[in-house]
Structures are given as structure tokens and as C-alpha cells.
Amino acid sequence: MHKLLTDQVGEKMLLLGNEAIARGAIEAGVAFTSTYPGTPSSEISLSFFQISQESDLYFEYSVNEKVAMEMAAAAANCGLRSMVVMKHVGVNVAADVLMTLAYVGVKGGMVVLTADDPSMFSSQNEQDNRYYGKLSGLPVIEPSSVEEAKEMVPYAFEISETLKEPVIMRTTTRINHSNASVSLGPIRPRITIGDFQKDPFNLVPVPAVSRKLHAKLLANIEKAAGLSEHSPYNFISGNGPWGIICNGVSYNYVDDAVADLGIRNNARILRIGFSHPMPADRIASFLKGCEKVLVVEEGEPFMEEAVRSIAQENGVTIPIKGKAKDLFSRLYELDPGQVRKGIASFFSIPYTPPELPDLSDIPEIPQRPPNLCAGCSHRATYYAVKKAAEGMETIYPTDIGCYTLGVLPPLSMADFLLCMGSSVDTSGGFSKVTNKKVISFIGDSTFFHSGIPGLVNAVFNNHNFTLVILDNGITAMTGHQPHPGVDMTLLNLQGYGRVSIEDVVKGIGVKQVIKIKPYKVKKSIEAIKEALHFKGVSVVISEEMCVLYAKSLKLAKGKPFRVSDKCANHRACLSIACPAFYVWKDRVNIDPDLCTGCSVCAQICPENAILPLKDKKSG
Image 1 (cartoon, rainbow, N blue to C red):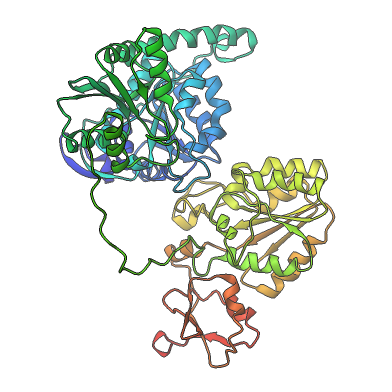
Image 2 (image 1 turned 180 degrees about the vertical axis):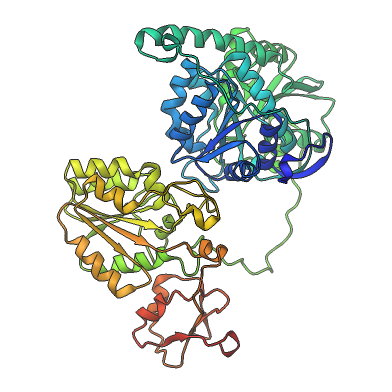
């Protein structure tokens, strides 16, 4: 039995934040779950996927976040409790749904989990999704700990069913990827079959209906404000003239800093867990008891702006600060030291930061930039494209996935990136306004997610570029989740269909479609040359299973290679940046424990000096 299905009330369990969120949903009786995977949210989806294999919970890896949200919205409008999970930028993809779903509402509870990523550990931006609550008019809740993350999920479902609206639950990386002991609660029985009641003049938002629904939404915001005023997750601790308002992980940093600075008797903390609508009356009352107030929050000044507005409306003229050059930045994560220093500075508390240890005698730690895995087929594809395009002026739009790491030298195969699917669309733009050869890259999962419409557009408008689809048979970067092109029988899972990328591309109307096996370097180069010289839209499908995925399925068969005495030290092999290579005493070597035997380096060595290793000991 999956550990998150344990029905032992009060039992303590060490859980990752994402596991705690999944457990909270199970305790809430969630029946329908959907997602498009994205760090830092992916483990929530993995938990649901595993649980669905041994229970009546429905779960799916949807083709993108918009589809996932629409699936969950349909289930919620049949009375089921549903949850849709995504990372912060995924909400951008689903925003079209979210804005109108706020008007239409739900019958059963629906929670929209957005995992924000301050400091951009695995993201292209660090947008603050609290603003989606303000934009859509939906409630937003934010936990400050792993335990609270579990507790807030049932609470979110209750709010949703009270208001008949989805509820946004916003987490950040430090909550998603922290571990803590969590007390298990009772599991509410799941209701897995619902019923849809036709009500088109409330559920089909043509303009006449939408006008009425918008009025209903505004009334709901007023109800939500009342819930926020009395929410147990908006609370005050301490007593004194100095006020601190905080949320999320910043609450932990504030609480520690107040203790470390010895100002427990001077400071009052207002922790905001129900952050939209803000509890205006509670904040006004809090402000009236303070001489000055500091707002501590990661990201944008979301709470700070609201607090200033509430102060103005209530005639409170005390100093209120938060985001400022001498306090807290809108950039990146906060940390305990920053918060301690900011509090001391704002309240004029004598404070000397701990002296940093002298590290001058310690050698600098070598930089380890992110890199494609040893044996990654993307590296072979990049090499083949670069060779096929020799002599051409090129532009390389790229996309979101492992292959984005092609931006780094010596590969240097990424010139422009915006978001999921942008490689295809921007290729069309570049091809229309430059005379350069445009060669774009997109992964298999990303192609299904948002690459198809751009390719349809390119065929219709007769763009001139080559799209390379890197088909490694799985959604690799976020942890090997399936997509519509995956052979699910390899995972011993039945009942799934499978969509052929080649059939989709040809069905769209692309006339020049070529498949390559990138480990066959010479053949790949010749095939790509053919695609590059085609006038119009051409597609190259580079098909080779992710090396880590192949290992997990016990399908990897390659044997390690070695550098023989024939090596003339030309170092052409290093141009592919494989981490299995290293230089020792000015000679190139291969680490047999990292080498996967893809043989790409052997094929590009001008002396044929790279040979199979008969056994690791002989290397």
C-alpha cells in the first residue's frame, strides 16, 4: 500500500512538502487529479499517479496545463473534489481557463496548486502568482511549513465548496522541497462518480450570461474577504509596538529573527496565510497598535501594497516599508540572515552579523554548470546539426527541456527562448525577417504541450525553417513522466493510447519529414543536410530513448569506450562536452563508470583512437 494511503490517524510520518500536499488532498477526499509536470511541483503529481494505480483516485498527466485545468473543472462541475497541479509558469498556460472558470464556478471543491520558484532554481522567471488571485478574483492561500501545507489542502476544499469557486493554493520551492514530520489525519471517503446538471444560462458564458456571472464573482470576493478575516491561518503572535507582517516561508525567518534579536516583547507578528482577499479589518486593527510596520515577503510587494492601501483608508500614517534598497529585494529568495538584518535595520536594533569564517586558505570550489548527461542523444543531435549546417549563417531557437542546456559552450546551440512551444513560433518570425537559416529544437513532451499549433501556423503561412524534434521517449527534465507519445507498455501500464509524432507532423501537412537515429552520426548529418536545403517547413525527428530512462527500464546496452594510444590529442571529442571525458596530465581520458557506450565520440575522432573497452579493469 502506498504510504500516503495509510489510514492511521495521528501517526507521524516524515514527508516531503509535495508528499504532504498530496496527503492533504487524500485526506480531503480528492477524487480527480490532473497535471502537467513541472518543478517544483512534480512530486505531488508522482504521488497521485502512484496512488491512482492502487485506488479509485483518477489521475492523468495531461498534455498541458490548460487541458489539465479544464479536465479538473469538468469534474468539479459534476460535484467531485478535484485538484490540478502545476508550476508557476504553467498557470500562464491555463490562465485563459482560470479567468472564466472564476465566473462559471464549480459545484464540488476545486484546488489549483501553483508552485512558485523564487530564485528560479528550475524556471525561466520568478513570477509571483499571488497576483493571479487578484486578477481572477479567486481566493489564495499560502502555507508556511510542510505540516501546514497538508492541513491547508482540506481547508482549501472547504473554502471552494463554500464559495462555489476554485481556490488557488500557492507554494514555493522551500515548502515543496523541504522534509518534515507530519501528523496524519482522517481520510474522507472519495466520491468518484458525479452528475452534470444542465444549466447553460449559468455555465455557458456568452456575454449576457457573463455579465451576470461577473456580478456573482464580485459578491463572492466579498464573502471570501469575510472568510479571510476569520481564517485560522491569519493570526497574530507577540505583543509590542513594532509590527511585522509576513507570509509563507518568510514567517519562519521572521519568527527566528525576533527570537535571535531578543525583541519578543517589542514585536507583534501578523502571519498571513489567506492572502487574497487580504483580511482588511484585521490588518487595520493590527496597524493601529503599531508605531511602525515592516512587511516581509518574497517576490513582489503584494502584501505591502495592500497594507499601505488599508492604512490610507483607515487614516493610519505610521511608517510601512518592505521592498526597498536598504531592506528587501524583489529578486530571488529571502534567507534567515537577510531577514534578521532587515528587521534590525528597520527597527534600529544594534546588531552585528555573525563573523564569517576565514576561507582564504581554502581553494576555490570548481564550477559545475548543469550539463546534459553522459550519452545523452541530444548531444549527438546537436553535433550532427552543427556539422550539417557548416557554412550557413544560423539562428537556433530552442525550447523548455533538458536540451535547453545546449545553450552552454562548447555546444552553443540555443539562441532564443521564451516559453514552452516558443521555438516553433519564433522560428517563423525569424524566417520571415532574416536571411539566415533557422533551425529550431523542441522536445517530444514540449511538442505535444504547445508545439503543434505553431507548426500548423508555419505550414499555413509557408514559413521557411527546420524544426528538430528531440524525441527521447519521455518527459525527461522533470523526472520521467509520460506524455502522449510514450509507449506505456514499457512501464507495464495498460489502457493507454499512443500518438505518433511522425503521423502528427505529416497530418499537419509538413512535406519534408525525416527521422534519424542520432547515434548514427554520419547518416544523421546527411539526413539533416537534406532537411536544411528544403524550401519551406521541414521537420527532423531525432529518435533515441533518454539514456537514464533506458537504464531505469534495463534497456541500456552500451559498453564503455576508452582512449587508445593512437590519440593525437586533437580533442575533437571534447567538442560534444560529454561529462564522461576528463583531461589528466594533458591527455584525454574517458571515465568508464560514466560512459554509456553511445559511441558518438568514437565516430568523430579523426584518428579512430576511441575504442570499446573490453572490461573496466583494462581501462
